Every structure is written in structure tokens, then in C-alpha cells.
Length: 101
Image (cartoon, rainbow, N blue to C red; front, side, top):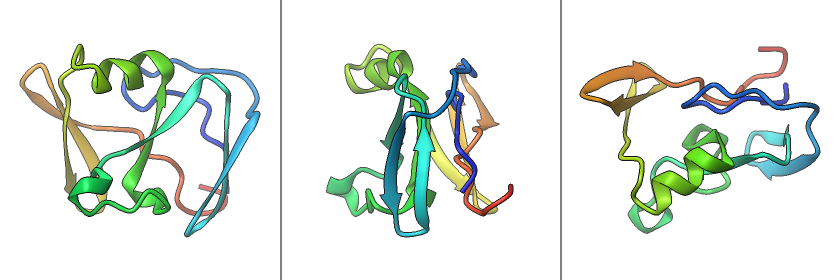
């Protein structure tokens, strides 16, 4: 799987991947300044091992979502995640789901 080196919300890019996590779809690598965020929470039936339910976020965006400083809603349209920010829906850069993508 192709590594994800940028935040899906703010677009900040980071260096070479240092972390790896195994998902149902295979092993995925990403930099230490990136965390994987469950779009559909576990408490709502989301699968943390499903890469399709995760987006790569920088530490700042991920922390801001969880502590309430950043309000973001997600929805899925045609198998792609969109985020509602500032009153507008926009596609998020979802982690690569297929090799070579």
C-alpha cells in the first residue's frame, strides 16, 4: 500500500513514513506526525481495522477534533469521504486503499 504522508484536512505534508499499522486491507505506513482517525466511531459501529473507515490527520487536526476545537462532520458519497467545514462539504484526501494508487 502506498504510504500517506499528509493530513487529509489541512494538507500539511510530512517526511518519510516511520509508523505502520495493519488494517483489513493490508499494512499501511505513515509519518510519526500523522495519526489515523476513525471516521465512524467504534461506539457507533465503526471498525478501527477498516482502512476505509480511517483518514490520516496531523496531530494538530486530530487533537482539535477530539477536544472539540475543530468541528468536522463526515459523510460518504460515492465511496469517498467528504467533510463539512465552514458550512461547505468538500472531499477529504482519504488514505490510499489500493496498491499503487
